[in-house]
Image (cartoon, rainbow, N blue to C red):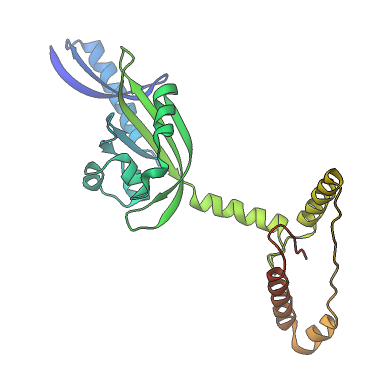
Length: 238
């Protein structure tokens, strides 16, 4: 018999550690080698992977983890999962999060994290509990990807859809939606709402005389100054 520690990939249970004392049978050796090959391929994926014990001590990380976070393998092994993900701001990773992992076996969601150099980034994190045959949790496997760039693109698309690109004020679509909402609210509580239309005189003449750059500058200054004059609940739109 031979004592071995293997990283096994299971279709039902994901990544897990198993400590088995088993005979060196050829069939079992082939299956074991195949499992380890699959586990190695998974571990070399583009998503960051961390394996921790039940006290959140990091036992193993992959190359994508170092690329995303900036922490080396040696750095990771010296810290707990919460510190690597959130730095000194690890209060966000509270007991409720771990409670869900321990109860359901899984937690996933977006989290603002911190790289080794102090830069913040947005990640999508999944934590899975690994249980032994008796049902006790033995390890946690965490995977995450950096979604900072994707979120920036999504925000840009949203901005183009609902905001004027020059002044960054709500555009016609967002303005119409807010007017409808205001009318429904006023109708329900019996109040009135005010609507003010502001025209800019001689804008065409300014563009013709000095160029559109000066006209754009005027529009941006007007948008900024009018926005200073209203409450947070009010809307200035172009």
